[in-house]
Amino acid sequence: MTAIGVMGGTFDPIHFGHLRAAEEVLQGFGLERVIFVPAGMPPHKPLSEVTSPEHRYMMAKLATADHPRFDVSPVEIQREGPSYTLDTLRELKQTICKDKKLYFITGFDAILEVHTWNGYKQLFDLADFIAVTRPGYSVEAFLTLEKFLGPECFSKVHPFPVTLLAIASREIRRRVREGESIRYLVPEPVRLYIEKHGLYSATAGDMG
Ligand code: ATP
Ligand code: MG
Image (cartoon, rainbow, N blue to C red; front, side, top):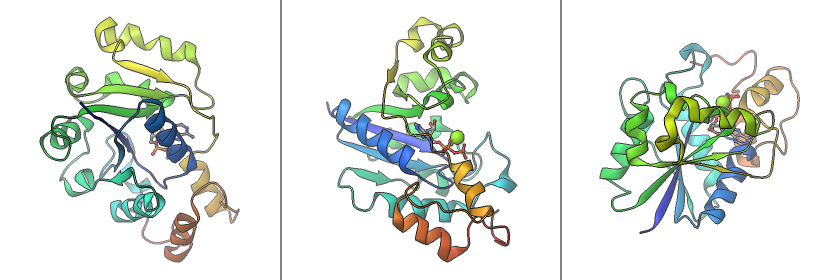
């Protein structure tokens, strides 16, 4: 059975930290492809602070266009209401990922919150998790997860070391807001898109 990686996130904007982690997981786990799923309304983030789903989706498309095994799915931005990973994995399993093993890819920061996600126990029936390393998040913290998840779910979380890139979307947004360069933190088409649409700058009107 072939396996597919699913990487959820706000991707506001998508950056080389996301892309490089996905590339190393793709190779390391021999995945058929990785599907990036930009969240419509991230349940954990205040709505007013998130760029429109259409912009985030477009940037993910631009960032992955030149990769034959990277796709972007609009499932979450098309669905009404909050974006729950559980609904997304169910939908993917019923549609484009039939008969495929699913791996949900998160960073070491996001995995620490997985037990707070909607219906998290059922998530583990649908997918295994790959938790990639991220600067600032220790293996010790990762190990505390067993206490929250229990041994059965925890055994389905696979820690995976990737090239550590200290890049974060919030830092990119801050740089744009303060007029600093974001070259070499995001793919060039993404940088140009941000510039063209005036995203993240203090004067940008359509952040909501
Ligand atoms: P923000 O600063 O807005 O939270 P972010 O950079 O954390 O943005 P998200 O869209 O929140 O990006 O992250 C999507 C997924 O990618 C999460 O699972 C997160 O842990 C992971 N991730 C983000 N940046 C990195 C990175 N530099 N290295 C490894 N994983 C990352
Ligand atoms: Mg984040």
